[in-house]
Image 1 (spheres, rainbow, N blue to C red):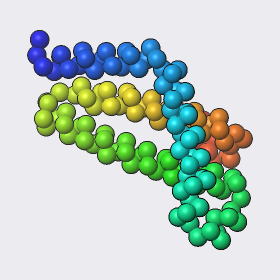
Image 2 (spheres, rainbow, N blue to C red; image 1 turned 90 degrees about the horizontal axis):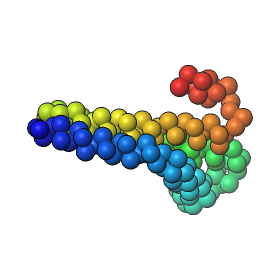
Image 3 (cartoon, rainbow, N blue to C red; image 1 turned 30 degrees about the horizontal axis):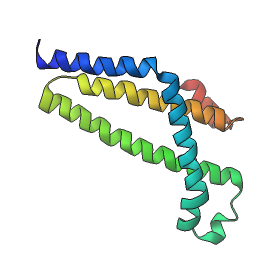
Length: 135
């Protein structure tokens, strides 16, 4: 067996583990997203924004701001790691095993983000509802 097929078998076992424990991972991801958005809303933003502006925002806008900040950070991380995985696969390994694992795992994380937003922000405004119907 060559190195690429060995690596693919190992990474497929990681995907199988993820699939067999998917509900546990969803609970962990949802809990982490709730904790991070609460931190942004109650601790981070009041210290970074002008207090006179942030205290006059309604709760829905504060919630939206904290969720969009989380989406920005996770999106930036996913973009950086995705390009890195593709470069490693194409240049170093000449095998597409790592980017396959990356696409599966982070695709699952992004799907859980949409599910979380769908449930947490119900009723959704028409533009966001349209986005969730399309996705």
